[in-house]
Length: 266
Image (cartoon, rainbow, N blue to C red; front, side, top):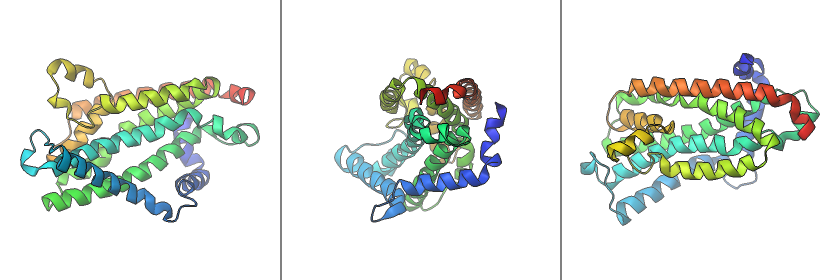
């Protein structure tokens, strides 16, 4: 079971081939091709800037002097993390059920599929990060040195996504309603996460519940290093990492325990 975590290394050529197919296949047939992966975050940032700067005149607490663009950038940073999460989790229940040919006819390492999904999501996250960095540079005329910690800040989310990928893909084979349930959950989670607001702006009694959300420390730490030139909250970081590793082990165990039954159902 623990060997699952080394699957991309053991099957490196297969991983590269399927990851490339996953990224490029999404834009196959479109006129601009993979360029849409870069255009989408640009359009998103433009829309958020217009809506919150020009329409709502919104200001982020503690950054009022920077105007509405500061609000849009902080919102965009939170949305980057949420999109990384939702892209993997929303698709996870159908990862195995949509690949019945790999289950029945080919000796394929099925445990590799969540790695491919995460790799594709990280590609889009990287492009959104470039948009964010350029925008911060245009607004502040410099980038904070703490932004170099961005990969470290995001890292605790990866084992959690891997575990959820294994868990939900395995359950999705046997319970098809999982896909619909996860879709509803992801939509609700967007508003229950500090994407459109800061967790610190909530009343103290609500902050406790907000901190139970595994996305909260990731989003808040990203904003700290990107906009406040402040080191991450390491206590929250280690807690998120611990939760992520626990979810990864649970997902690997469920996947390993149920994979022999995939072919019987599909």
